[in-house]
Length: 243
Length: 243
DNA sequence: TTTTAGTTTTGATTCAAATCACAGAATTAT
DNA sequence: ATAATTCTGTGATTTGAATCAAAACTAAAA
Image (cartoon, rainbow over all chains, first blue to last red; front, side, top):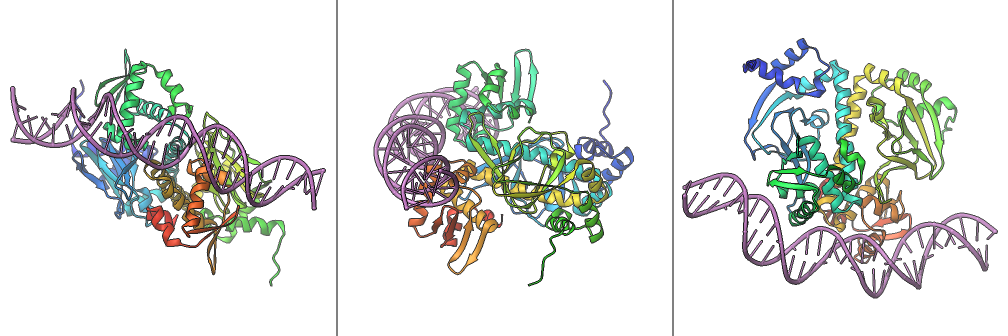
């Protein structure tokens, strides 16, 4: 097995390579950027930014998952995004003077790279391609939000659960001979908060799906999908699948 | 009163001026663009694009309102956006090869300007500022979607109705001595489809708000807000107000 | 105007999911 | 390993909104 270089510089550049929005830059430019990046690690449960904070840099997730959520006035949390390796956030806050519109919390130990506001603005004006890539990525997120909104608005709970299982299968699943195993990034309560339903309802519905032979709960953190097509028809909206 | 020029060229340039994303261009550039714009008008009820269509141009609304919505498999419509004068759509479909993710329908007679795919791509690479403006505008929409998602997920129906009344007050309201009069862009059914609730529920809740003295229904197409602060506290989330 | 079609409101009933309450598992800490 | 704590599943009950049904109202057409 080839030895992997663990020096600072390599790690930084590694981080850059993971970021789709910077993929149009050449080696030299990537190296230049890696020089000006700053880094910060977070423990599980730590908060990266608070809703309402003034953000001063673009944050890129280098390792680990985070959840982005809002609290309602009655104290309930609505999870909006799960950001994983290569995802970024904070771009809005750097281009406008808007403060953060959600709280971001580490679900595991997380490593981040940060690009300062001025560096980011220089970069985006020097490389319009990066702006186009950001527009594309934001477009992906908007499509996901639009689907989520539709699913909340018109679909029943079974649809939503089918949808999130498919979404997670793509994002957090690994193929096995028995089927796709999803390594859940969230607890049952977290998933319920993502779907906007009660934890108990989720438990009951998952139990139902298991008795119908569509899934098999391996443990609290992983689910085996035994009937993918069944889930697809449960989810109803075929658009969910490619998210 | 000064006479307004109604010639083709002036109208086109007028159209350009309404578009925030192009506001950083100077007169000469605007004129150049106005030369390459194409135009199309639609009657009330006409469909501008269908969900799934391949889009070949950026569409800018010059006059009138449109609704953007998706149908669920069981035939119910979820309205995602109301686009008004100066709003645009289709930018995703020009940058990626994605097809339209929603249907867009005219709510009134609508005039549009269209910028072709290639012209749009040239423009965006020549003027990175435009890309930045688009990112900002997409950011605004995402914040709105995020709030809508939260409101669907965790808030009760009263919250949502308060929220939409405030949103519409900003977007479609005019100040009068009695209070803000909202000229509703949608029927009761449309508003219900926007909120993801049943039309009957909306009727009942609006009736309740009226008997509580917070609003006064002038006719099916306009509502007078008599207790703005009351609505704000009903909506709960203060972020709704600036949307 | 009267007719007609469409929209909105109101009432009665049903139903799906929330809530409440608690027991059983699974983690984490000691 | 055992205790403590946090997470998950299940049953009983409540509840808020959906649905069904029909009347009242509005707007458009003849």
